[in-house]
Length: 106
Image (cartoon, rainbow, N blue to C red; front, top):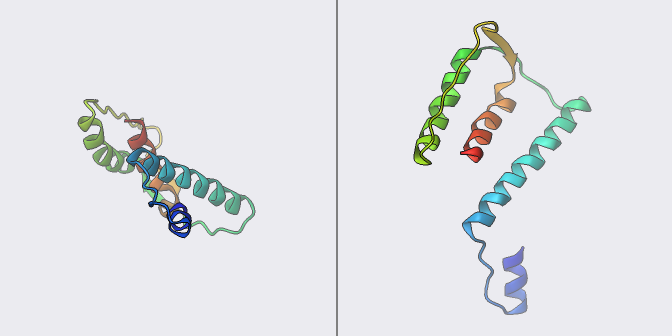
């Protein structure tokens, strides 16, 4: 939108910095998450629950996050308590959040 406004006004196009682009993506993810929660509360979103092995899910997330941690000189340590072997979850809705959030923290 800013580029279109600049072009209409005859000014040079505005180019966002990488920091602005990253923050825009984070904000968009946050807004989409809030909207999804609103849909769930209103009963307008279908959830596709399935049994998930929690240890396997933790391992998958750790495999994605470990390179991010190493790149920043951090060490990732995960511990999965054996009390809960399985859980029911909608991986189509929940998968992006665990992968996104740790990466933002590293």
